[in-house]
Image (cartoon, rainbow, N blue to C red):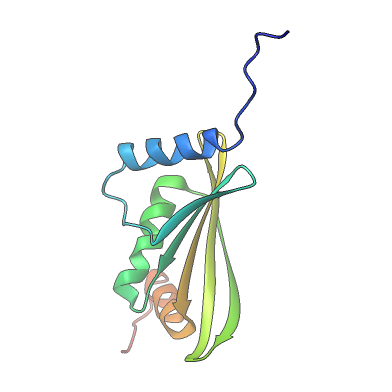
Length: 117
């Protein structure tokens, strides 16, 4: 019989979340976190450019790559903005659901363009 412990797949992402939030308590609160196939997934939601800054805060800490996907909702065009990175050797995905117009304004502001309300 082996004395090697049986690895627990969810343990690394769960530990990564505890470490991330402990080391960076100023990060905005996510609506939810879950472990999916050894990946840590967080969900944010924004209706304003100010709320959109939550994703920027995670990007500043985690780095990574951002991708966007448009979709139609009952209340108009929306966008899923996804930050994919790694934290303590765990893949981390932070997803932001936002009206497409808010994402457009946030991107324009980040590019230094004047944003009209």
